[in-house]
Length: 439
Image 1 (tube, rainbow, N blue to C red):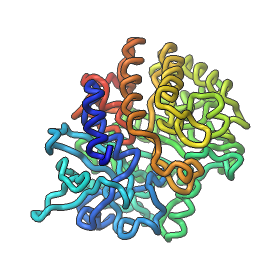
Image 2 (image 1 turned 135 degrees about the horizontal axis):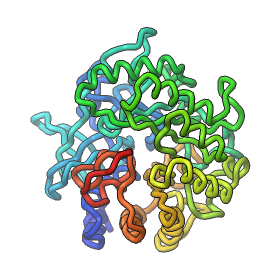
Image 3 (image 1 turned 90 degrees about the vertical axis):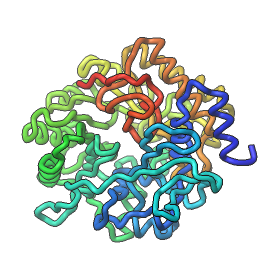
Image 4 (image 1 turned 60 degrees about the horizontal axis):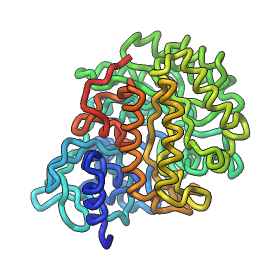
């Protein structure tokens, strides 16, 4: 194509039914964005909400490679509007890449913009520092460390276990840097609590509830690494579940409660439900049988792909199909050396998985793959998957939902271009603009 601008414009022309906002958003998510020093935050002392590194690094370099962006964090997210493409309001999770053709910088009047190939293509808004981030817990910890919010304040992200018990080359998912992210933050001397105390979580939520007077925070997600043995004497269902139980007892009905965990046996899933969890995310990661074995060796060893899928279907009998929302990592289907060689093959495989679940009333969602450099797939595929794959996936995703008469899943805010807040993929931006029916 000769330039990234030409590539993007060609795809917008070829796929006119995919919102133009989603084309740019997917490109930023898969390839990252550079930040001029004028666009960085003053960390927790400033007026801009800084990136919290809430579970993975979601960066295209290690902290030492990010330069000033490692010292003055970029914003958690950015909003794109206007420009020559007349973009509607689009919330994008920040993934830093100092070599990206996209750059956020302030102009001579101090107004932030997004530049592509040197041309200003959008105005950039940054999230204001929320009042609840300005208050510390009684032990001095920050709310951002214990209970950061993302999706423009919609979701409280509670990574209560910051590492994963799938450890090492023979067990770790090949695209996942949760364990490295833990190590790099500790090495940099940043606070990064490994196992969050339930009372600290409750205290942080009390601060959020007190100062979030607009009630912008609508949901919380409990998540962390897989637990194959125990943490603090608890198995996975009881470990994550006991946080939900405490939250629901202290704040009944205040937030939509979600948990991201492995696909667990029926009795364990029932415990989540009994503890007050409303939405269950047993992520299936990648659909293809061979790629699941290659990319998720720990999950294949401990559970197995077929059993994983059976457990997802079983969980729908407990939570209701609409409230079971497994994630997959969009783009790893094309990762070398094992992935599909063509976009056609990758889309066909992924759509097969979508149809399998959606035919049962289960609506998966996806995160756009960020090839983090400390992961095996990131090292081998620094440019990620082709942008065309991501755009065609959006098209296939919406079509499959329509084929089975499904609507946008609960717990993600409003769908539609210009309205969506889900920031780590464009699936909500690409769905019809109608009110999401929350649980």
